[in-house]
Image 1 (cartoon, one colour):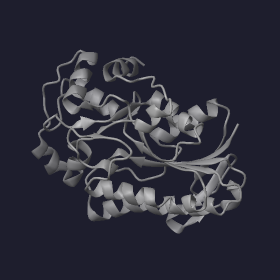
Image 2: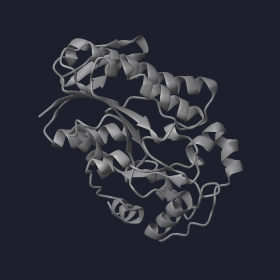
Image 3: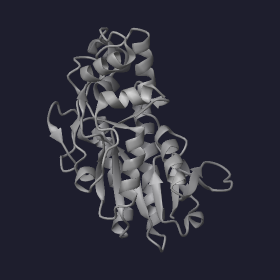
Image 4: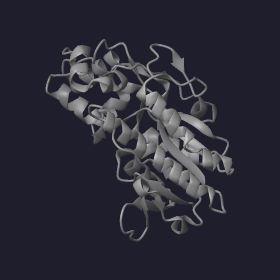
Length: 296
């Protein structure tokens, strides 16, 4: 079994992956700020500090750390979001590059890389889009270059929206529908590329075990849906109407630029590398996935 360091272990994705990788028998080293205890590694990315000696002999590093993008984006907020990803990734990449055993680096990214692309089908070969999130993802992935240049295997995990019954985007959406307040967001025609918690864990395990997979890998189901289809499916699963739309103008008033990029942007994405490398999805279709998750 492997020895794997992981940052962002307390977040939704990090918690799920720690459970899955731990269940596989891997030894995990969780990065923490402040004094490190057993099974932990101390770091402070804001001060460019990472305890390199504690990483000696690791087989891989899963880098998930980054400040939440939720909420209204002020100029200061955007700087904090970018700095938390780019600076920490560069620190990790440079530290790993100096280790003699060349561990693999699996680094988070996001489907925000593609920007707002309407109904266009996108895969890992598609160019980046426009906007703050697209520029952020380009710079985030580029921050891995010191590790690539040192000959390490680097994978950029472009996460879609992760559906989990106990957190993330699904819990508040389900609550709104249970209260009879559910409905499409904006026009409802924008595509949502999603992934279940089970396939999140399964796909990362698959990537870890597939040395030929390098560079960007889309972590999304093979069946993206429109926002209106997502809302209608939630309504059917929860036996509630889904007829109260959230107008785009109101969302922009509340969230500004973030509304356009997080809620109204359309990304219709294929998991081309996962599919071609033989990954078999546990949850390929939305409505059965929602029924399974919301019955838990």
